[in-house]
Image 1 (cartoon, rainbow, N blue to C red):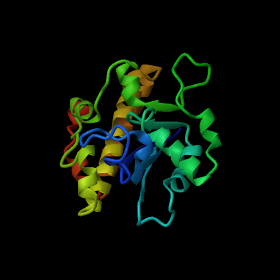
Image 2 (image 1 turned 180 degrees about the vertical axis):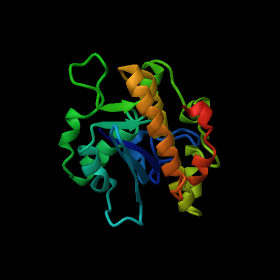
Image 3 (image 1 turned 45 degrees about the horizontal axis):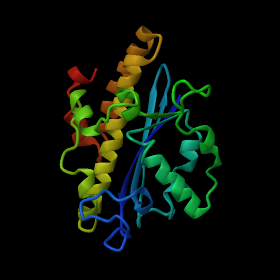
Image 4 (image 1 turned 90 degrees about the horizontal axis):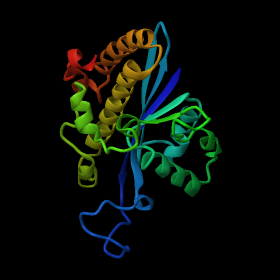
Length: 234
């Protein structure tokens, strides 16, 4: 099975006093957000092995001007897309980016989020929805810590705009850490809820341990991997 877990960090350069509804501390409406970093983990999960790759698009540093062009092929080839709050933010933002650039995004119509009672199988796993049963609002930081992960360390989303100008590499690392924790929570979801339970749980435990080992060798993820409490995570 091919999984793509993704996370997006944004800037809002056009959101200001001249905009309708603007308030200094208000979270800008989605159309004002422009991606500055997109990080995604492409994971191939097989019975005998797990293959992981961390990919990223960074504004001003990537060869491709649009994040859509960078991530399109990986999303299109994935069996499952995994996000945290992606139904409300990340995927609608990518929809807007595709419309803005004119890049073919038509495949997403069949892959976008479906509630479990739809006839089409669920392809987009927004874990905030899945774990919260579409009712309770869950934060990534608190959920990650509850499950033995490190959570957010020195940055949170509200600080991205201020940090970006002075230290964009810190924002890149923050985005990569968020997507890794989202992926690890997804593996816990597989361990707990996939059926048949006994078989999938044993397999998920192996994937979790292998993912921690892999992350310990990735510069953007190393410190996060070293802080994971294995006893709580599996």
